[in-house]
Length: 334
Length: 306
Image 1 (cartoon, helix red, strand yellow):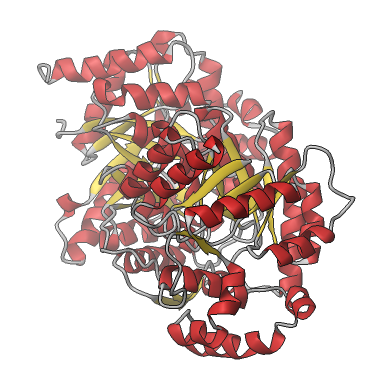
Image 2: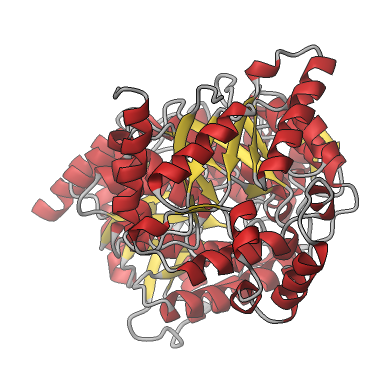
């Protein structure tokens, strides 16, 4: 049984301007709830300019960062960016952030001792700054002394956290406006339960927390090469923490082999070890009908929004149009 | 001579966009989008301005390489150019030492200069390798920065007073490469300047420049004693206040800003052109004022009609 859900589009900074512009310009007419923008650290387009450009080229769609690693930006910059994008988007901006992907952080030599505490503090500090407070605070990630934004009125920016592990999911239930989840179906079910339980415990209504699910969506019905799909899944597996894998029944030997190959060589090489079972567990692929069936399954466990893509390969523009149309047709057209 | 105006100091995005459109339509050659400690993140404001304007160049900065990595700076300049065309320039500088300390970035002045000049080389090279025609300027005041700016595409000198400008130019006399863009970035107020001190918008801006004056410059002009008292007061308050301004005095402060009528601006611009300047950025408070951009548009049209 499926719950009510929205469909959105996910893009990353590593994509080219032509592709991201097309998505920004067509997001309204496609009926996307949001465009979420993931930052590949130090790669491709600059996240905040890309976010601004996406807001400027759309009129109705919510545009969110999904996610920004707080570990690579000064927190004063994040606070200023939040205010600026909120103003550019006239309230359509959502700020998604997290600690960052394991592979990405390791590659850049970033090690955080207490990621949960750091993320909690970052959210608190950003909200205080957006509320107009002058802040004195320091942590592993930042140090502010008498810093305030000095804006004329407080701003209220929705905060989404891109997280994985149980402690982080509890944090979402306690303080966030939404969560951006990624992982196999069994994991998603557990994760949403954890967020809801933490919300209840904190005296919040669980329905006030948006659950955005972003897993690789691979529409093989429009010419996307399956090796691309396998490469993406290899990367996803390499980036999946043990805490998430512990919730699954997948063959850990196969998973470990892929992780080792990605670390030692490349996602392309790792992709050679991704079989059909793993492809299905870690991605949503196949025909548009099958994909939308999977969306409905995910909505049935409490997801409020499903994000399409990347990888954008093959005739992905047509694929996006077809998938949105399929969702629309099942709702009797809107 | 390229005329520019600094925006995004504390205006809302809507106000900044209106001013940028007015500047664009009125023939102002370039709008510069200031960054930290301004509230709004300059590269995103630059994107919004690019959407709404047609021909003016858009400068991003002053941007501090101490606050952003070289990679991020190259990324935002490249993304702007890829998305909106080759209309963008970059101004680098160490930034406001006190403001940076508030966000956890604290270095000696010497290290700040070293880090900025080393970032300049990397950023300039990487922007060029990416195939963008973005000019990289260095904001400079002290001799070390002025000399370092020769490795950039241009300099924006943080001076106003003609005698001091001449002193700054003497630091690099005979070394200026062909095609180098010589520019100035003075606090500006075009209008009635009879009572300079009580005009807080310009007197505060001038006082900020004076207080931040490099040691070498203040020694060269014998300003140390006068600045010592003001710096002490500034440290005590942690921000600019009227008593700091008063301690510096009107006559002294007017050396750190252009404040005068359109006619006086005309004379000033002629003098700058004669000295070899190719661009000027009219700094705050001119762009913050309600009709500041209109005043500049009129002044420019009169200047070139002459």
